Length: 344
Ligand code: GN1
Ligand code: MG
Image (cartoon, rainbow, N blue to C red; front, top):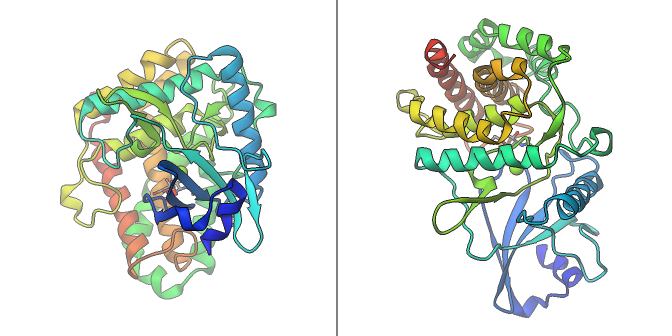
């Protein structure tokens, strides 16, 4: 029972209300209310984050760096346990973190306006910029090969060889579509070996719900730092394109509703580059549009791979769930590619 975690933070079960919260696919999240205060409690999925302590170490490194160099940044630090720990392990339940619900701040599940997209992009750009002084060797890798597209492609090939044969047969069209865009992998392999591409402090999960906004809809800070690790800027810029460009989400079943909104694209580019223009190399800037292809394609590959592997990673609420998600992402990729000339 999740209630078993409460004593670690000094909460009494009789005085604490616990309810399920959010839409993340990987970690379990609850909203906790105790003595009139609100918190977010999160259980780390240990089959994904195999060394949960790495997350806590990274958050501490970031917190200390910001406190020393950018004390004005609104950093959302974990609430320490009664023993002063930023992460607690509860036998039979797993690893947990508790966060304060930041007062007068709001998170959104859907990006409604281009201005919000601009604010979010600026926040993610600022985060990387403010942390540019951190030595990459000190930042731990919380999920090995997380955004390594070559590795994701290999996992896909592996699923084609060893996955659910019936699903493989039924997915021929999407499998061919993945093959037909494999130049995106080649391009990634080229940039990985280019010394003009730098590893930076990268968030790796730039969806809109990971930005806090104030009451005037201005960005305050970014949250959910579990996947912060060394990475390339294309992960963050690309995942914003993947999740902000279309008016419908990755769950949308009707491909006809998927589109790329030009003003949202421009807002992402403007917001991100307003912060990052002096950090990125000229070569990196040339890959700005590519970052959308990279992330959308990788997510399509990951969803399709999971479908062929019987939904082991993402889970599914209906049998075709991950197939539909993959189709959604491949449609979004097509819609984006149609605009390559306009945006580059
Ligand atoms: C997962 O758990 P959530 O929703 O924040 C996944 C992301 C995917 C996303 C797709 C650790 O993120 O990489 O983009 O699902 N995170 C992990 O919805 O695999
Ligand atoms: Mg996340």
